[in-house]
Image (cartoon, rainbow, N blue to C red; front, side, top):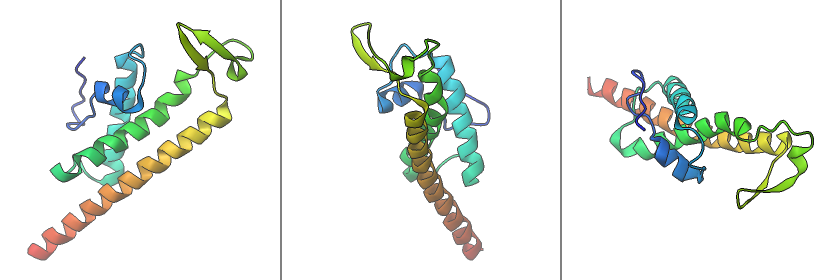
Amino acid sequence: MAHNHPDCSNLAAIEQFKTFFDLSTEIPDDFLSEHLISACLKLQNDTGLSEPSTDKETQWKHAQYYLALSYVLPHLNLFTLHGAASTERFVSDIDARFVDTTEINAHRKMLLQKYDELATTLRQVNTYNIVDNLIAI
């Protein structure tokens, strides 16, 4: 499924996002698309770039992946059963364990740290390019 946004010309592909984190193909693409778009817009805002230079495209996509997963993660673990967060179950031939909010928050913190590292690197590259362009004038 193609997804796009008029303000995000360099949006990460859903299929690559799912592969990067080994996410289930059963997760709706529309749900993930919303979060990838939000991540792209935030990355643009945080770096001051509308798109990366060609040599930084991988870092740009990975930053989107980490931020989007930090948005998605709490929703992937929603369960209405009392006590489900501490129970292991056998679901559809897959051993599933529902993590508690402490674990989710720890994972989100790690994802946001990785995003921040990549956004900082991309922002620094943008700053260097601005300075180089000013010196050339």
